[in-house]
Image (cartoon, rainbow, N blue to C red; front, side, top):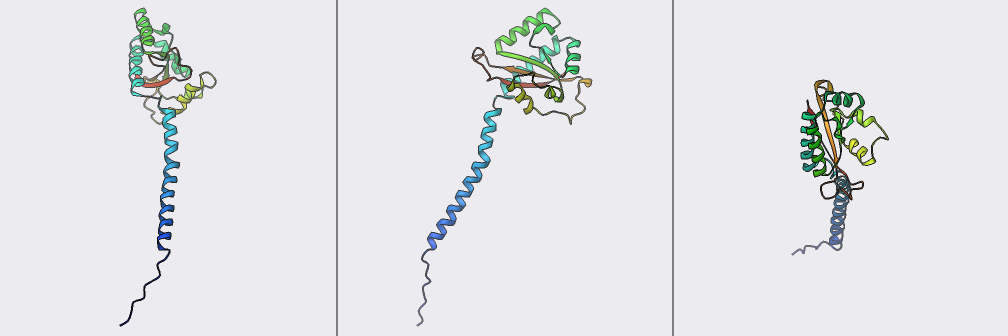
Length: 183
């Protein structure tokens, strides 16, 4: 009878382990290089357009729609923005008082009215704090939507707030929100 020769398989386990290790390490490196920037972006943008910010922007929009004069819209269109934090742009004293209470209760520090397309306000440099400029660069310019312009009555309300509990210690930790306005 012929005997079958046994093949020498010494070292096969070592090669198999090395290949598996290289495969696992390459997957870990791939995940690390792709996930870590996403986590950094989340940390950077977590204060932008949250549900809370959108809700407050909605109520600021109600004040803008009901209380602002036509001149305020014209100023916002020509300049690129209008800081309506000061309630003097409200037409009636009733709206001024309500607006001031709204800002105080919600910890709102700034309210801006801008044209719908944000390219004008983005072009203004050295006027705003760095955090607000970062938020503006985060916003899309909305320039492809040509039907929504100031001429057709579309604007945007942008709010800056610290939150109810953090007004005194806000520093540079503002949160931002925006919403569309159609007058």
